[in-house]
Image (cartoon, rainbow, N blue to C red; front, side, top):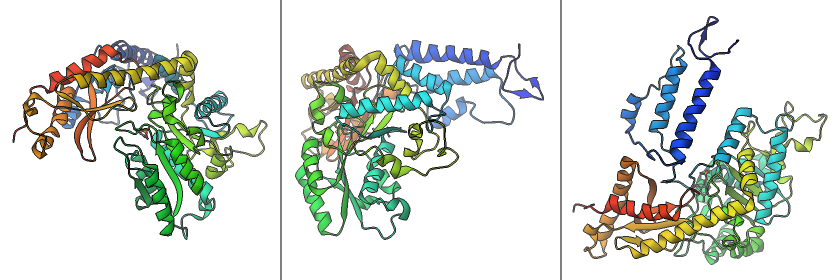
Length: 499
Ligand SMILES: Cc1ncc(COP(=O)(O)O)c(C=O)c1O
């Protein structure tokens, strides 16, 4: 039987295993490690090794000679061993977590077909699939028309919004650039995601031209401060063109009041975008949808399905309510080798020129498969369960002596301090807060080294380091929540902070 092999030197096979055998073994390894062990929680979440030591353990160097497949398999086993496992039921470090087997199957299938999504002729099924999925996502936002595209992450989706809003405000910028342009100013809350800063820098708007609007005590943008800032900007010769509200802020999970912000944007003729990268999935839930009341009045939405919906990375939709052509017009470059004008089929299905990319990975399939398998009702049940987990955790924390809740959860984020017994007798003053700030990093170090779970921490404004638990993993049960609280107690109870 003829085999096509890697590592072929001068027409002779340099190793014993065919590519197909290698692939079969790789499949078995992935199945055992990612599915039988990781998703079942039968391994550590992390196996932390410092960078220099890890470099020594792994044979990373690329050489002139081919490596035999047996050795590659060994290296792949090591890759599993030393990788953090976001698919583990006890990974809560980021706003994405867990492993959905339908999603993974979709991801694998996309990778196996290896298409690129620019023209209908190259990706017929995926073009139609993306259009269908985008339509359903827009419907959930209450948009009656518009367009949408999958982006490589929520940060890029926010940049899309910024660019399209700017194109709407002054279309000539596409050709003429920023030269001679009035000072364009954008507005977002002080708790918004840092991708807004990156976007403003990347698109040449300048981070000095972002107004960070004050938030209330639970992290929501204050609409009266927004309006005041818009008026002041105009007075000072700036041109307000873009407001970013957030539905589900990264740390606190706050939902800005979209209706109140939409009133202001409509009155001043400003594009309103909502960054719902994290919190957008409430749109599936009859119980929690009200958190995004007014979403149908926004001009565009960022919504990452790879976050709370558990679709494998990356799956981030950028949706616009505007006329369908705006994304195409704002981004097209009409390359004649791809988008020929004399094709034999309906070329309106060559959707790729609305993207800022050329080659574009297919992200629709994994979401489409999961959506088919769960239906709207399935996603709704999962989102509700995540909210219930956060409620359960907050209630539990309030009953435990050594825990202190920062605020009631608004999304599936639960933010709190663990106060070890050694700090309980210190009066609440500078010494207490200074010492408390050192507790969360120690708990984090211990959980990483134990490998039992992963949860993030951060300071925020006047609040010293606190733990941010996030429920994005649909494998997490209320029993797991009880276990997590006990585990934090176990990891932290003997902490003593020296003077
Ligand atoms: C509110 C918000 N917007 C945008 C992003 C960026 O998304 P991504 O990490 O997919 O670029 C995040 C990431 O956590 C986020 O929390």
